[in-house]
Image 1 (cartoon, helix red, strand yellow):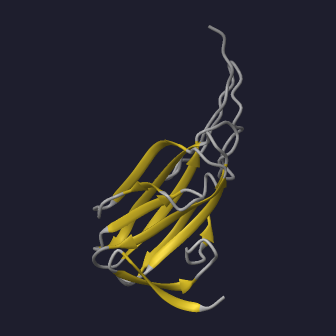
Image 2 (spheres, one colour):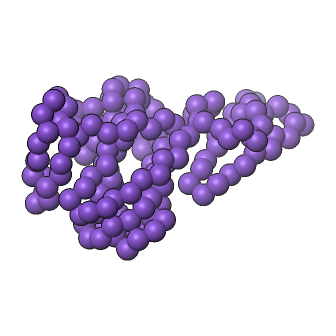
Length: 165
């Protein structure tokens, strides 16, 4: 792969290009919380994840330090924009997004002004798919049972149960 610069929306992004046109990045799995840093306005961090058609996800980004304006974009496998936040203060949250394609999705994090550190999280809204912390109890709930856990900011654990109406 060749090192190159590309111009998108008036900003220059540097990175290794892949066949789909995005710079190579990190993967993120449901339930994971990734920390990152935007150290210049020209920088974009990319995160990829695999998903199936009809999966429902939440994506959250929290600026933890700095004064930059976080900007988050979610792309489907065909590089269509599914969600794009405007430059935001400290928190961006896209909730209940139903995905319509099977394949690799891409999240792009950048700044339109300034630098910042951040936490990024991806949650799949389904039973038994989100990573749990070591202190968490089982995800399956049974009548009369209690399940304990640890929740940190930007964390969402899912629990499953069956019921009859």
